[in-house]
Image 1 (cartoon, rainbow, N blue to C red):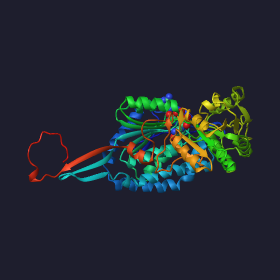
Image 2: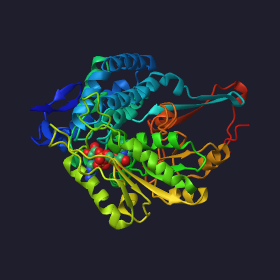
Image 3: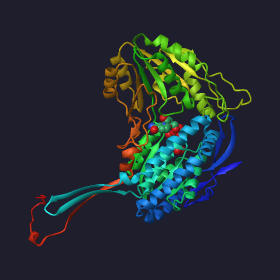
Image 4: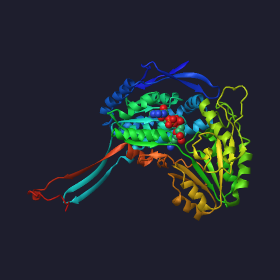
Length: 497
Ligand code: NAD
């Protein structure tokens, strides 16, 4: 059986605690790998390596940092297929989807390659007689990242490339469910010439996370995962004096107005609800149909959903793979089983699916629930599986009020041909990312990603300009080169005149 170790100070380090967790191939249900679970002492070793590396890396030139990142970009590009295969083997998503994940992660490496323009700072000359003021941004020190299972390559790449480009060193704790891609990312960074200790990976569970949250040498924590854990990370790391951004879960709504192109809306709903088996924080899990659009829209979604091919992620014919674990599969199924009793109409029930030759895989088919009451568990909870709820409302106003009553505010979308309605929606909806006829509005790398309400705890969105601000702190330098005429004691408060 394969073993996944830690990556500390530029080399693979075996788990010293002797504790390991199982990693499963979701398509077969077989345990293929064991992953080391770090003890607090092993986390300390990784933080110590990062702290030692910071002494040099934090003061290294921008040219030195970006030349490593350009080489890293080229290596990642050459290893797209290999990384995607690693993702599929442990996450289960289909290969084309895994390639998309790698591409979106690469975008942030490319952004980091251009860090020179982001760190230029600001200069005001002659703010008073012979006085100049410069605002500069400097790195924080050691930064930690804790990431979820559903994007085992992309989400780590949302964090560490920008953090290290800004001059920080990094300790990553990836999901224990699919840890191999993160280790491969670290190996490739070393191959690109990243000095030892700048990027470290500790594997494990809560023990490792909690040590990072309280460690005195960790300056900041980036987290992406579920809402309850995001809240815990934000509260605990803040209490230990750290800067924190903690991105949480979601329930993303798609508002379909009666004038929308219903074929385009149905295509978008099926792609966004069932892609990656619904295991995306930006998945559309609730369609809100306005006026008389509902019946036709549900029929079109059903027709498309019935044609989706489900099978192992490494089979090019598969469009959707299995869920991450057997327990998660059963939990997702329970929402479908309970839906009718809670007032929904079950249009498609995918819970009975089996895949020939893969009987022990974590399979579930596509489910579609219509006329779902807002009180039903399938609507109230983040299911994180291929279950789409359709809710019916009479008016645009009712639809926006329903969306804004949700505790989450990650992504949302409006489908319409009416520019005025779309503009109104952008301004009125309470969510961090809005799509207009775009169902999954994940921002490109140079715009930041983040939700509102229970989808993000902290003040900074991730990557883009917010990412650079998060991974740096400001310093303002006021300079005077005195002239002999400037002499004399003055006890008044400096007024810059
Ligand atoms: P999770 O919260 O269970 O785990 C995330 C990370 O936290 C993992 O590294 C895990 O080991 C660690 N962790 C788990 N329990 C912990 C505990 N009690 N104490 C400390 N650390 C703990 O999330 P997941 O199941 O891996 O990922 C799915 C969730 O992530 C969904 O809710 C999804 O919406 C969310 N997500 C959000 C975004 C976003 O950008 N907002 C992106 C991807 C995923």
